[in-house]
Image 1 (cartoon, rainbow, N blue to C red):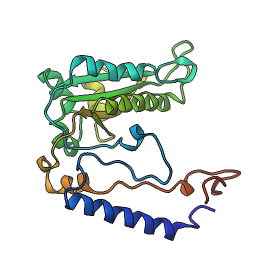
Image 2: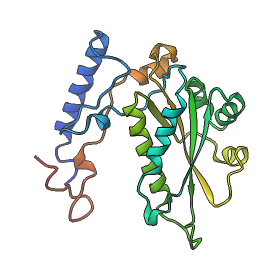
Image 3: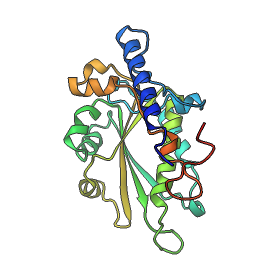
Image 4: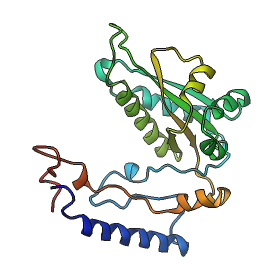
Length: 232
């Protein structure tokens, strides 16, 4: 059953958190490089993905930015519907950037304004051919954004996705049609200096990364039963 090894997992988490904090404090770990401490080996590209709030005010070259959305373009989708649109604003387009920044909640706008690129993913909630509800549209948009994120990471960029934005404001600001749904905002850019953040955000930036153990969400045979291959 899920949670039977909880105390052992929690001790391991605490040990990793203490170790990471020690490395950061003694300058033995690059602060903006926060690889996940995994239980089993995974791709370095996945291990190194994380969501910072400190971004360098360095523009993203047009050809690099184009590659990110090319990666999203080739994501899988149900019936090849490709139910995604990305509204994108770069800082050199001041009017559009301000408009995008204006749909974010105040907390996110405070740090995201330093990123060179802001974007908003939007999902088509109906199928193109039949006009029926597409119940997996949000899933497919998430898949496309995941590919965009890993392409970004491979090019030295980081992506911070945000649920904290005003959907109604976004719909009005960008004239989003009724059968399309704003999904998530994104800040995209190169790693920045956490010292540029407020004390509260800097603490969160430097905090060790944590995740639920596999035993809590990988099940087999019935709900609440941990899959046998997860247990050791």
